[in-house]
Image (cartoon, rainbow, N blue to C red; front, side):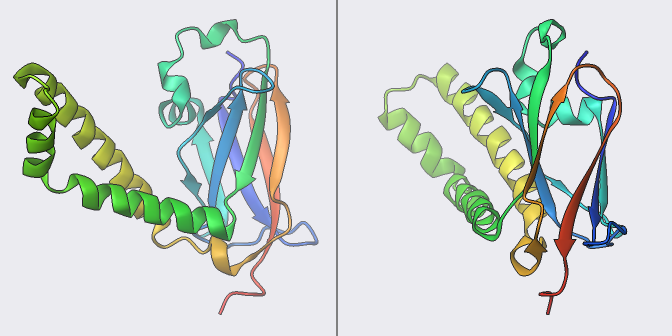
Length: 180
């Protein structure tokens, strides 16, 4: 498999020293081709300013979980990125809005009935909506205390090509000078 067994993301200062900034959100774009890519959920730094992601966690928290034959990929171009302030705000708001919209189960069921769904498809649709709501709750909980909007991000993204499952370390320069 071309996905690393383990990926470590470490925040550093401008001198290359580890910078223990907690609650910084990162994501991945995993390219199948120049125009098509898989996205991941977000990952958040711990109190040492790092994240350790194993291969299974990366797959299960991405669109790769639906890919039938990851083994056939010759190499995998990837982009590891820090969410900027606007993206972080948008993700928080979108996940919170989705939860609000899907909270009223009776309204959803009523709408599906009015839309000519039968009982069987209503059950399936309701289950899918509930699963999505759980995922959005996880994303919101991950994002709610992020501080991406109050730090200075000097390394916004790192591009790489995975040719085997060798462990990877990505270092991002982020300054906490703006933290109030």
